[in-house]
Image (cartoon, rainbow over all chains, first blue to last red; front, top):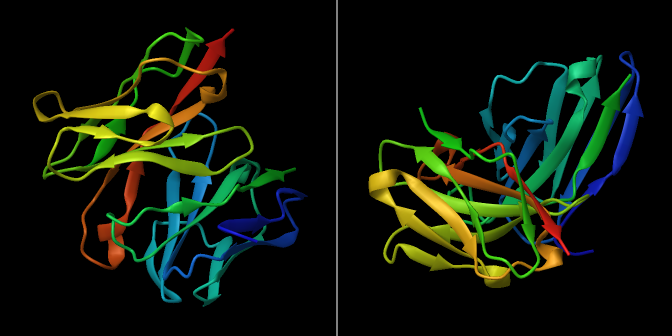
Length: 114
Length: 118
């Protein structure tokens, strides 16, 4: 595997389910990000991790719970989601949490909440 | 607050024609500017970036962009579009270069979808 991978690519879940999204980067980077991409809205930054420490949480509802066990892996745990949470969830990584370092994106997980 | 505006939601051009995608930003200091492309079913890929220096920057796939401070713009151009350029294009501004916190984050525009006619 190369670059940034995300699993699953598609997920359908009910409002009472618990599921997790997984992201893995094979680039040796120290920073990882979760973004939410909804139709007709700008890409929204959700969480930022630097060396497994969360450095940014952009007022994301508590039904989204991130986890970064090491610098290569990032999870987004989901529970009791709402239909408006349906979106494409993108993971990205960069060398450092510094804007001059390019962010590399995974292909995303398309989430549908029913 | 920083913001990015991409005024065109959807643009259609003929293959071989020239392309210009507009981007306007609002930022109090010297901006760090980016263009990303997203093909269907894919994540975002960096096309080019501007930090300082020459205001005309070259990127991958034959794209270029020009930074115009007086107009707060960073428009993306390509002289001859190929069918494979059909995708969604995102302009973004970076908030700073200090490590940690919000200093390394990007603010994205809503995107412009490009369709290419044969």
